[in-house]
Length: 238
Image 1 (spheres, rainbow, N blue to C red):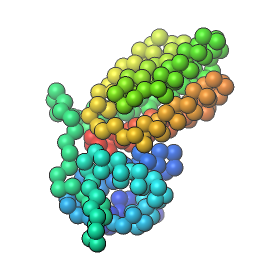
Image 2: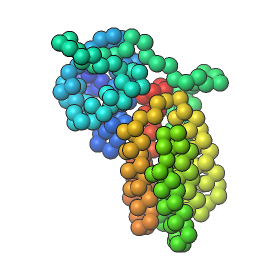
Image 3: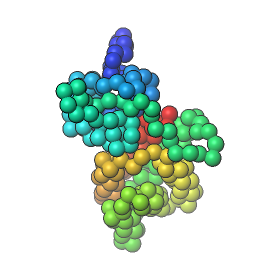
């Protein structure tokens, strides 16, 4: 099928997928800002038009626009000529010891997309003891109770707990390593409350699949969760 050309505010001809609609919407909006599809200082298309272009609900779009306004990528203006506008200068990611290499970012995301779904599948296939189940539920509860300042370390601990149930020390080490690298990248982007809420809902779905022994469901839940994070990191950092 012939690809449609880019138009003002049109990111691609394909609609956003449902699993991580918020995260992908943020990614696509950021792509538009970086590529100049939404030029600096210019007004974005009307909400209804933009939602149709992206193939998302207006509620999802509003959440994405609101979070990008808080993060300093967009600004809202009131009045007759108001609306949502691209800022004049896009924010820079937090400083790194060296230049951020997009290939290294992609390497981290690819490695994570392999090891974490595999860990989830193996955890669901394992014969879990009562203490193992409590260990997973305890890690889940800690993320539930975490505030913004502690969410990311508790998030990492939950994913390492999943790997621990798989029964492979080498896999635990691999997940711990990739979580550390992902956390370093996440520290460079804004915390988006909508994403945190969605992530925790995905955590619960993942834990439930593991505890009922649903290997396919656990793997699918991990794939969706990992992809959501990847969408945000690509949008903000690449």
